Amino acid sequence: MRGLVGAAVVFGLVELLTRAGLVSASYLPPASSILRETVGLFGEGEVRTSLWSSIKACLIGLALSVLVAVPAGLILGLSPIVHKATSTILEFLRPIPSVALIPLAIVIYGRGTEMKVALAMYACIWPILFNTIYGIRSVDPVAADTARVFGLGKVKTATRVHLRSASPFVYTGVKIAASIAVILVVSAELLAGGASGTGIGILMLEATSIGDQPRVYALTIVTGLIGLALNVVFSSVERRIFPWNVQDDEAP
Amino acid sequence: MNAPATIKRGVIMVRLRDSAIRIAAIAAAIALWHVLTARADSLFFPTPDKVFTAVWDDWIRPFSTTWSENLRPSLTRLLAGYLIAAVLAIAAGVMIGRSRRLADYVEPVIDFVRAIPPPALLPLFLVLLGIGDSMKVALIATGVFPPILLNSIDGVRSIDPLYLDTANVFRISRLRRVTHVILPAATPKIFAGLRISMSIAVILMVISELVAATNGVGFRILQSQRQFRFVDLWAGLVVLGVIGAVLNAGLTTIERTVLRWQRR
Image (cartoon, rainbow over all chains, first blue to last red):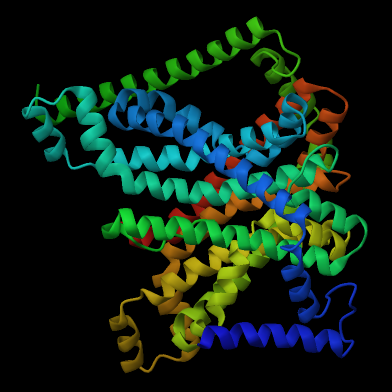
């Protein structure tokens, strides 16, 4: 209830400031016109295709990174020697901001979906990898030993005991990665421009270039909605499959 | 031989073995990089010796030029945005964390702003603030703000009520209560937020320079791409990796110093 009041106050303030002429409409359009524009966006076919194109790139990149990062994390988590050997290399690769790879990805993969997927995949690998390693490490050794005593082979122990009990951690990694995927895809679209691609970032560029302020604001809100929607979906799935592990995590 | 000396020797042996493994792995990785790129012979993927030579020739040797042309502008923007956001977010976090009612009012708005991927704010900020430094600093500050804020709120909320009651009993003034009880107790959480934010700050610095800049590390990377100098592009990536590592190390040092009391 109070949350609604808070949102209403912000809305009213923006509306008032602009209607009273205190802030130029070219900087901040009235809240009501931003809202109208936002709702109107979903009626446009072009917007819906672009939205889907961006979300699709996020999801494909995310799925591919799971395929790479979870097995790698399993190996690194199980073998201290492999982990020790690779940790320095990982610590060096990790701080390279993935958006800096966009110029390189554009020349290699062009400006289409492939480029966005590759970038999202690269960026998503890290949180999933590190969360998987952490999860595997924190598996109760008694459980693993019990499995061994019962004659489960190495592979079965790894998948049935380690991977299963680490799965909440893996999932947290995937959830963090999902928001990173959106960051990468939108950034890539903004930098690649409208030459051949579709996507929410490209719509933003177009709106910016014609100086349509309400539309720029509305599209920014829509990207926020993508983030919110992903968050809601992932959290509700989490509550369903790992009911014992629901907590707040401060993903960027 | 007595037991402690044996243990000490054992520890040294393990350390030596670990560093040997590490060095061998790095050597193996560079060798693999070399073999793969030499075999692929691709314009986009230069061999490591070329990349490191470029780092040396183009970045380290003319350091005074690279510092004033690329590194200083980038770091100034990054730190300015980061510090502004940190001060504001910690202050707001203390207020919101102390007041349940205030939190109820503002949390939905915060949640929504947080959900916007920070680079998506770029077109908006371009329109509002132009292509100058103020746009970049504002973008970095805005992107970095939510994680620090949320962690500060969390840290302030999870303070042991006993501390606050004790402060009350001793009639400690409001200001002192904030500086001597609330902030120190919330510091570990605040630092968690600061650490998450550092990587976001680097991301936003780079992307804002890729879109609109005339200097900075991101600008230089973009220039290398436009002139098809891919060795230089890779050298720029290596430099960014080093910048990220240095910033993280700096933050960790500050955290260790500030949180020394918490260690044992």
